[in-house]
Image 1 (spheres, one colour):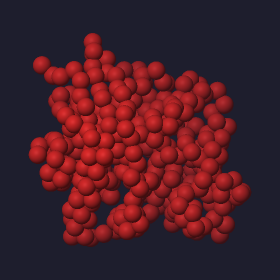
Image 2 (cartoon, helix red, strand yellow):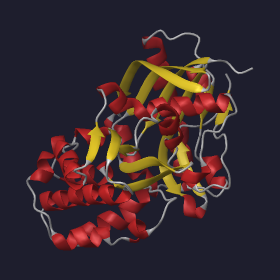
Image 3 (cartoon, helix red, strand yellow):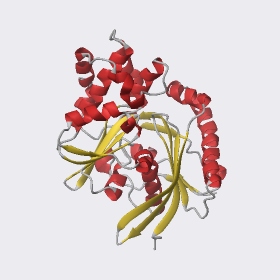
Image 4 (tube, helix red, strand yellow):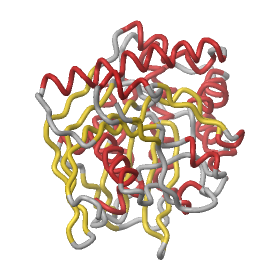
Length: 355
């Protein structure tokens, strides 16, 4: 018999490089229905040294990546252990950690999340469930997005679950299938241009709001091959580095104009990604703090009820769901949906490392 309640720490590091999200979570199941409680949460910002490494790691050699993986695992382990000690957490069932995505090339059968080495369990001194994406890619899937099963299990009251982070993604029910896919880059591009202007990010969208839309750039972005593909499909930082930024740099525009145009691009692509333009949409992720971006999304979806949850759920939804994925793995239950990733079949993904 499987347990009916679990106490875990969910850990997530996203492509927008905001930091490492950690959440102390309780999950319980009764009559087949899951419920959750979110307790202590923290985001540990990356030190400048790590921020600089992670920004350029996509171009590292294999040996440099192996070294980075070892060092990041040590850094991540110390960060998680610090969180556990600070909040005096006891009797955990597991630490459920996503790691940090460096390479994501499912079309080549490859994805790499660093920080998922076996020694993480020793460093944390707890059972660890991690490395959730690799198995799906081996089964012919995109290895992403993984959050939709959590959307289905925990947030079934909403017609759509939209996340605005380094990239945007959406999930929804289509008949009996859960459908999900990455929509477009978001903060991976906006932060790049904010950095160019001397800012870490575009606070509330104030920088983009100063610019003007360039119709030629807007049309060119919307014409990219990715947007013509049907799901399942997913994006990695390679798409930004190799396609989006080089394209945008061919336009002789001010940085603010590029940002303004890209905000419009995000909002437009979000609207056309949703098959039904009305209903209830749960919006989460760091991009929600970009008031101007949210305003433009509402412009394109005037009949959609866009619901922004409380700050905890807004910021820690992905850590929450990776906590659930870890629990499902411990129960040997399905935690990745083939309808979402394109894998050969639904499966229970991730690896378990005991101390």
